[in-house]
Image: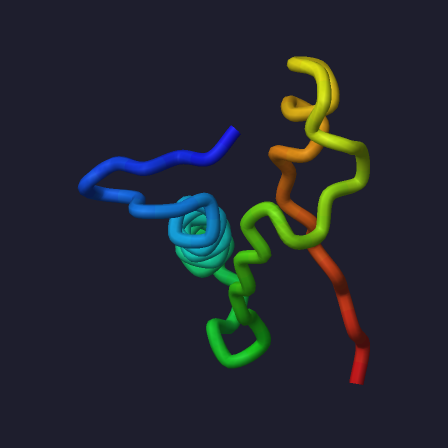
Length: 69
């Protein structure tokens, strides 16, 4: 379901804010900020169709990708 609040005008802004919060948490835990980045996809990369409450819940996620240089 689309979100529309003053703080989060769309799902994309909400998704980006969640991603940024995860990055901030990882920084506080001592991970070098130069190794981190945040991306919010909003409704654009669902794993499931957004047709049931369970599917919508499963689509609310954070993916963490680790790349070893």
